Amino acid sequence: MFSLSHILGLVICSIGAFVFGSFVEYWLHRLMHVFPKVFPTHPRHHINNSGQGFLWEFRDYILLSSVVMFSPFLISREIGLSWLIGSLVYAAFASYAHQLQHDNPKACFWMRMPVHYVHHEYNQWHHNFGLGLDWWDFIFGTYQDADWVEEKAQDVTQKGPLELKWY
Image (cartoon, rainbow, N blue to C red; front, side, top):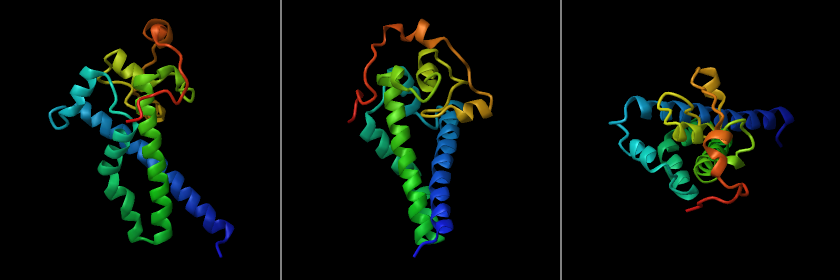
């Protein structure tokens, strides 16, 4: 049987994977802006200003992070499974948040300002790199506030949080 401390350790491992995923996503997005020639699809993403759809975004997260997702299985099956769960939850959350900010930024209720939407709408090549969370932008000094609802998003219709491009 599992003890409470063992279960708590596995939960903490899953949460750690979620937080680590957000950290990697922030820095990878930031590097895409520093080295646009290394990531040629990213400037096109800014020109098109649209997401691929939740399922395609999720596929890309899984492919890009599969080594990090599965390497903890080398430590143990339980740690690997809890890390994988946290990583998959973050990949799903980031995919959802990214697509939502392109399709329906007003539905991003968990952030004061949808940073990725502002990143695109204000052409902020050096600010607001978070996709689903703004923590790292605050920590690393790249957060830039904007009166986005009044200036840019006033014409964006309010839809529900599930009204987005899914595939």
